[in-house]
Length: 372
Image (tube, rainbow, N blue to C red; front, side, top):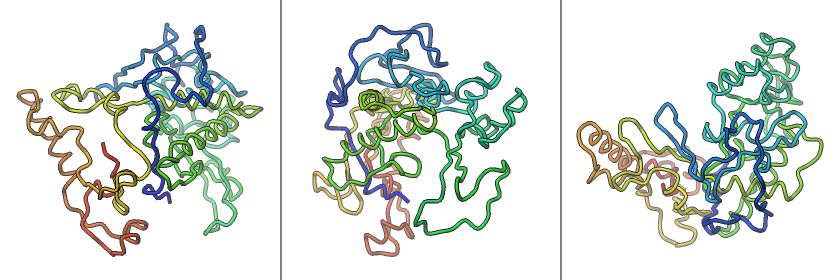
């Protein structure tokens, strides 16, 4: 269990205004773009610094603070570095908010008959022993990936675990104490300045206690994670060089993604609202910001439950009429409820224990306390 109050990190102190985001990580200079074989590539080898994509709820956008998003192989994030044809972008697509979706995976299966690099038995199939000799066999073998967008992570029970495995019932006939099959959706590699843990279970995270050390430690964690992913998911025969790790991490840290438009309300940054990636990129965050237990780690101010203000402006002036006005006002009321509606909080280890009370009156922001 990861205690999010102890794992907050920030890159707010970094210069986000052009040039190399992290000069000490060895960002690459200008390179003539090449045409990428990856499915994310368009006729052009670069996406604009603000890349917009339609989705079922309107549209989202990614802001790259370092300029245009180079999707050619000049960018190691989009380069097949391993031995199985995969790159980071195989499972982290710009058009799918830097992750994957079942719909997108199914489309790639249809287009390639299940031979696209995402379809590999080391982690894409339900079992590494699955039959993938025919199209129909591949459709069965990759059912979790096709239907749920899940990658299989094989991890054994660690030494010193507080439990033991007494039986395994795996419909795919593989899992055991030596290697459990854990199915997880690839996490988005965007908005990383707001990370509370690296990986689903935090296994790549190193806890920190100093707000000024949080950014450096998270950079270290992401660097290790990029190498582990290349060795595992991409089946690389050699570790990434420090230079390549640095380029990948620097690219990831420059990305900010958010929804920009919703059909019923229109643009989410209209009439003073703060939706979209530009406002998100300006949002301050650091280790221990607005902590409910200890207060703010840098300012010393007490916890503020009213930390969500993205749509505050719509409460007084939605900047629209008719149904759109009503929808915007409803969002503003929802944000106010999120900030201030009393909730009895009990049984939350790490919070109730730290406060020394069995229960107390909190709000949604008691746990979701990072501003905006």
